[in-house]
Amino acid sequence: MKPFNILPGLTLKGRIILPGDKSIAHRALILGAISSGVTTLDNFPENNDLAATLDTFLRLGVKIKKGKKGKVIIFGKGLNGLQKPQGSLFVAESGTTFRLLLGLLAAQEFGVKLTAGKSLSKRPMLRVIQPLRKMGAFIKSRRSGVDEYPPVFIKGGNLKGITYKIPVASAQVKSAIILAGLYAQGQTKVIEIVQTRDHTERMLKVFKAKIKHEGNAIVIEKRRALISPGGIYIPGDLSSAAFFMVAVIILSGSEILLKDISLNPSRLGVVRVLKRMGAHINIVGRHVGMNLSGFEPLGDIAVRSSELKATRVRRREVPSLIDELPILMVASCFARGETVLEGVKELRVKEADRVSSMLENLRRMGADIRVARSNRTENIIIKGVGKLKGASLRSFGDHRTAMSAIIAGLAASGKSRIDDVSCINKSFPGFVNLLMSLQG
Image (tube, rainbow, N blue to C red):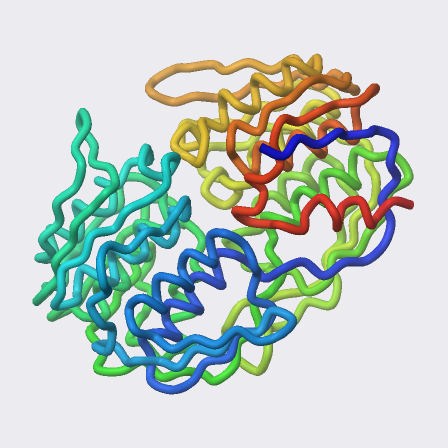
């Protein structure tokens, strides 16, 4: 446990470069490991989740070297070069590592047991396991109620392509099926009800996979080899940037420039919503990373303090900002009027129940916030109070709850204290120090 005292009254100014996008980095590391050639990743983020993915592939027989200043060099083993590890694979609390690995291991000829940390072991996995079983993988897991959970034993083999309509909007489920599709006989088609982040599809095109879009479906065909592009720059993490954006918006007199941030259209929901609320956010210097045509767009984001008005975030918008909903709740406390966040039930199966964790913290700070339930959905309703008061806050062991609490505390009247900030290391170990370095 690492408590932290939050002192209000800061003004944030400056320009910063954020660590690479966590979602993009996971996929770049995975595809680099199973491609032909050497892949160099720049601006690779150092956090607990990526450490879990890196360690996993080392144990699967992939040679990986870590250089200075966020450089990682991967010596690809090819599609069929992974080796059976000694013992089980422990992925700590990284849900992305766990779910994407399931898709990849579904095609390997060896069996392996995947284990997870305490929090991740409570998160549902049937949504991934079910389609992989349909493709021909043998998977045995811990059953509880109507779902299945880690640990999971998986034995791959000869997979067959399937057409699968994903019942819940999830980029991780989609990506797991697509990775398995690289090995499956025939065509694998994944149909999305609502578009989710498309980092896997973009990355696979860079590695010369046979992948295409047909309307709201992604089609992947078996490929004998993925070809490394050589070098990939990982754009700054937009989910991490959201905390700095909201901090600047609600702290009077603040103004910052965020450099080389991912501008993937499937991730820009938080920017669209904040601008709709009246935030002064400008995207400048938009370009494509490195020399990879069609890869991830990136650019600079200029933000300054703003007066916010309430908005309604529709259910269809949620997949593009699911990770940013906690910090949007903080922003909504400072907006004029009543903000409604529709269809937030998926927040209950993250690292913590983020609906409960954010409601408890914000209510302690004087927020007018409640949950409305109807027709198997949940909406969060926040009436802007214009100010919050200092309070004793909890992280609930969740990095995004902790970072949201810190931002709320900076804009509160009076000192706040959060019980533990060590959980922030899951995604952004340097968050607190970088935030404090921006004091105007």
